[in-house]
Structures are given as structure tokens and as C-alpha cells.
Length: 289
View (spheres, rainbow, N blue to C red):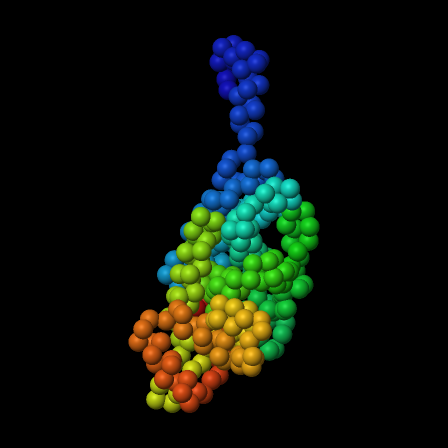
């Protein structure tokens, strides 16, 4: 402000103006008491760097313009536990999915371009630097946490909703697609339903061959088969205990169109069941075609 203009402002007015300038922006959500559950800042980053159609990520471009993501991650550290405790169940679900996905991207950016250290994973895989998800730690609500903690303790054990497996993006080519918009509580259930249904439209998730009675499913199911039991209609006391493939196929059938469901049921009369290979290559838009 030029000196000639200052005489028109009283000190009290200047103080009010200064205070307004320092108020936290709802889009930044950097204040632990004013966390933005619309995730507008994070949403801008997703829209800018994630392909809406295929979920591939422009890591190279994001690395050059990562201030927004870093600010969002900082807001996760500053969120106060007592504020989080006031979230309802859907707000907590949306929160932890967004946290997982954002931190997975952050971990890739911190190591991009990825250097090969392990022979048994693709050279650009997230597992080259975070095998097992238990190595890298992040600050959420002032406490250290890993992607493993988020996936298993906060999401799987916290919500018991198998559809979460199709929302958390493991930065891998054959994992769930990274959404180009954040998850929010008001649309969480509908979004999880949509993502689960769309997941099985991909050959990397499900192939059905009625001629050979063969069904092959994503390897994700081999890691967590019991997570799908309740949604597939099996109670804890089911006897005889169902086979993994029965749990998995009964769950999947709920998300298939009529004709494909009929093909699935035909295969089950003399079933050859197997898991598809899982490609851990990075979901990099500049590499994947």
C-alpha cells in the first residue's frame, strides 16, 4: 500500500483487515480445526494430474508442480484428533481413502523416477522403495503412520466394507484406478458401488470363458478372500465353510450385468478357477499406453 493511501485507514481497521488476510482458506484446509471435508485443494491436484478415463497419473508433471499436494499432506498432519473424532462413519471412510491415495502418490513423487533395487518387481514399481508398505512413514494427526497401517487398521478393520479394495489405488498398473476426484462423505456409498462395478469391466480384474469353464479374477482377491464373505452372503457360522472361490464369485456376481452373470454361473458347473497375474508396474501416464 502506498503511503499516501494509509491516512484513510484507522489502526483498528488495519487490524481487522490483517486478521481477515490471515484466515485459513477453506480450500487449503491447513488449520487443524477447519479441515476441508470437500477436499478442494486435493481435488484440484487430482483433476490436473490424473487421467479421468483410465486413472493413470502424470507423475512427471506433478513432480514439477507438487505444492498443492504437499500442502494437503501438511493439512493431514495438522488435523487435530479431537476434530477427527467428530467425523461420522462416512466422513472417516472418505478421509482415509483420500489419505491413502494421496500418500501413495506422495511416496512416488518423493522417489520419482523410481530406481530399481529389487529384481522380483518391475523396475518402476512402488514396491522398489516401499515393499510391504511398512517402510515409509507419514504424519497424520501428529502421529507416524504407514500405508500398511492405513489399509489394514484404518480401512479394512475400521469399516469392513470390501468395496474399499476398489477405491484405494496402490500406484500400480493392475491395481484400482486412481479417481480424478476426491471421495466425499455425501457420495461415498454411491462412489464405492460405481467403482466396484466398473472394476469388473476390466480384463485385468475378471475374465470368463464359458467354453472352457474358466474364470480368472484379480489377484487382489487372493490376498483378502474373507473380506468379501459377508457381502457374498456367508455368515461367520457358515457350515461347511465356503471355499475362497465360492466367496469371491458370489461377491462378483452381484456386480455383473445379466448376460455376464449367466456366463459365470455356467462356468461354475464345472469350474476352473484361477487368479490373474498382477502387474506392479507404476501407473505412470507417460509410460503406460
